[in-house]
Image: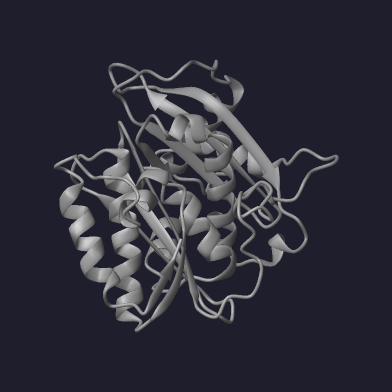
Length: 294
């Protein structure tokens, strides 16, 4: 050990050495405790370690390890964008964990702040924002090595051989709608909307597409309990409000809520007292348009 290393550096190096020499045994996550995602990103690869504190919060138990090389194109990203790319890929691979647990992200920089504070994201940044918005991930800082030592070690020693590009974001993304063909020319704007409610909460989102193909995306997380049908109405109203603010007069609406479409078109009666206020609001907003099709 070089003499110029101080006691603090020596302790850190010894701690890292102990963690690398005694790999953790994988365990299943325990309900009620958040997950810890340690992320390490280098120029050509990234690695992550998913863990969880034990009952006494003194030890981090290993749940999953992931590693991936960047493609030559992705390797040209800045460190911040590489971190965003790696986090999104890891979230897709570990989505069955992230759906059921709150996750604390531990890394050297905060990619979530960069992604979600962009006012009008485009390209890959827009994809990353959409994909990460469905998870409850919070960035935290941590000074101790522990799980980060494993992630750093994996990143510094990437596995060779064949690897696939990080293009698993949207499977079959050429299929945007199943049913009526909407690829023919349309003289107005198009709006895609969706809402989802589960035990973790309620999220809504919509995408406005202009005549020239420009995309405008909005998503939100509702802070009150509601059913799936109510979430669909919330998403539709969110899109209508945005279209009104943008002075859009013609709109083709595309969604997967059969109930909402038949309600709005007057084909089905609305008897649910929780849905009636939404329907009245929708009817008020639709008067601001000259033409709306479903």
